[in-house]
Image 1 (cartoon, one colour):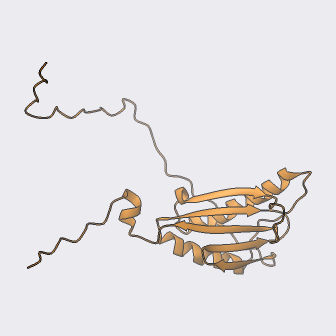
Image 2 (image 1 turned 90 degrees about the vertical axis):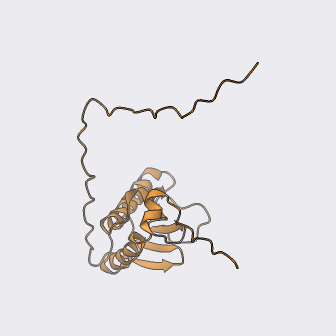
Image 3 (image 1 turned 180 degrees about the horizontal axis):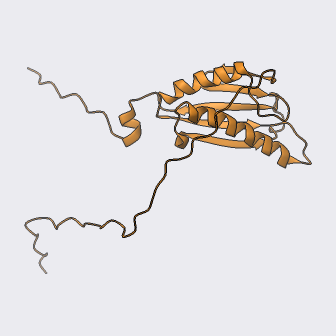
Length: 175
């Protein structure tokens, strides 16, 4: 049995027609700007891979100093499009009512997310997690949010957006 003949040229590309119905798209609604609350308890501590924010019990309010520190970090993260940001939110509460602490933690994560988005960080890079009660044995303050930036070191936006590899330099001829 002989193999089939190889055609002289490749087949024509398949053209998929656009959908018959035009669908209206809208830009995403930006989050409401976060305003500082004077006298709100809490602090912001910069860490090597992000920041730890503390809050008052049962509150998601940021004081002016914490908001300023978070805004400065957000501006830096906006220029690093290859980094992912995890928001691990905790809240004090009782073992009998885990729902309340998770809701407070979620409010904190959404507040921090709003600050990041308003400063230009893409929503697709932010991963909020409302954990609620801290794990047993955790000696840190329970009313906190840990912002952890992970991923590669900063690269150009053309690399992060389209996954392009930078062009390699041409090989130099050796004599």
